[in-house]
Length: 167
Image (tube, rainbow, N blue to C red; front, side, top):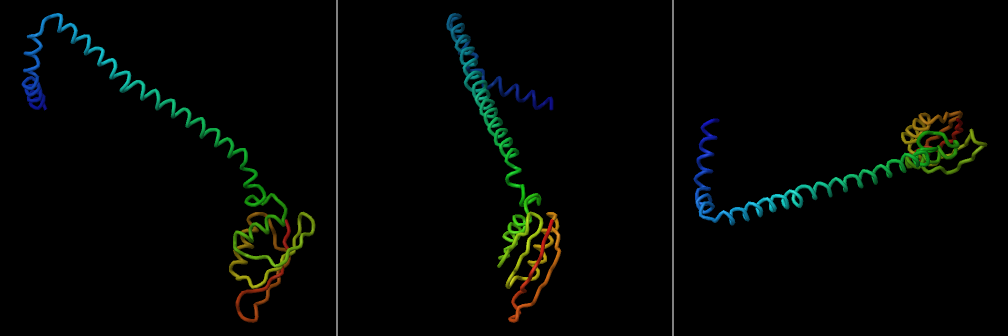
């Protein structure tokens, strides 16, 4: 390691030797002017090359942070609207049932609400496995199956079902 540093120092001295000789040939007044110019250039590089870009980046980061914080607060404030009755099961039985059916791709042929807590549903030509998945989803949202009647279609394509669901 020490040899490497020594060789690096020697190559530095060899490459800067012509500049040092030229420096020594300058008048003291010219040397003074170049020193002042060098200091000014160093200050300009520090200000315009390091400090201002860093300051600008920090301001942009603060602005982006504030914007993202406002967005987060807005989303958190509106979260109840979007999660409300559909995903947490806090709405009426009718709204939870119809939303869950849409998510599963089921078409409800008839739906009759009986108050806020009870709903009668009819399905035609529905895939039985899809109906079972839909009912499992409803149970996780607090909807209970009170009655269930299903008949296989005569052509073998799906089932017709009549259900009574409640909270």
